[in-house]
Length: 398
Image 1 (tube, rainbow, N blue to C red):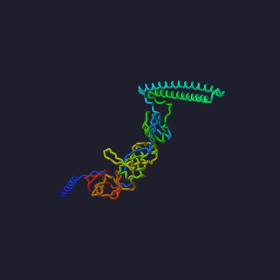
Image 2: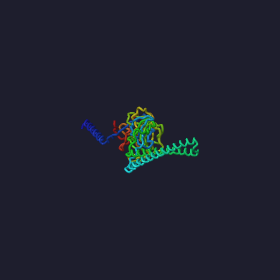
Image 3: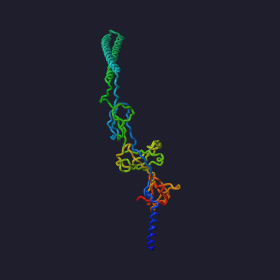
Image 4: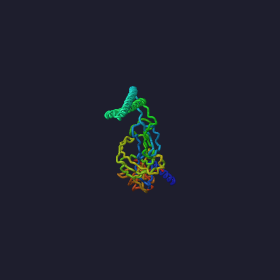
């Protein structure tokens, strides 16, 4: 065999051996990578809340009565002192057949008493005329000294007594007439009629100027004292209530910056914590887990014209900025894992996975601050599986 043939045979054997070794080598593992970034970083907690009117005023019925139809609707504006609804007296109750017959008999009895009082008045008037005539005759006789002073005094007393008796009889007629009118009034409203429109009514006025945000009663009907009718509030003084987990609420302080988003508008609203209430409450989550929640009240700082469509009870998501800084290195939290009681990542380095231990700082949602171990621009593997170890060949997504 010539030298040329030997060389060709050797080259073919080496090529076949290389192809065999390449075929037996494990293929690169496809991975997803993220870049180590350096820039603005904020630690925050976020949760869902509701917008609400601060210091709403509930307008209730001051006394029991009959509520006239409420014309105001939610969204209408009123000025302080405007009449928002009116009350009138309750209609008289309808009479059952027995009570109605008793009312008719009461009218007849009152009519009879009036006639009796009028007859008594006629008698007293006659007696008074007789007494006055006798007094005048006796006065002439006394002046001519035909009767004694004692007789004159007795005649004067009889005259005065008859006058008083006539006045009493006249008052008796008036009392009997009033009783008759009262009995007739009871019978006249036997069917439970309402008072006519000419009757006076009580107008309840708005304590503040603002917008009607809720209407508890709209239709006319009986109402009890203290029953709410309307709720008024100033929509320009809105705030947001967000119920945070108690473990997050302890990190929130009054004056802390808050970002309000996903409220329906295009812009993120600026806010600040107004109050963290000292008492929490228990709430069952959608998964049936008992949670301790704490109400946190947020004041809206953005101009009113940027959130004028926001109303009472609207859904808002709030992000409470616990800490923020510029020029901070951070990576996705999904790239971290524990290695010998330390945090570590796999760095994509020339097609292979390189194990790297890191020191981390604050966490914020899906990002984590890196204090040491990585440089900006390096790429880390997301969600590394147990198939990846130091030196493993990888195929990173572009």
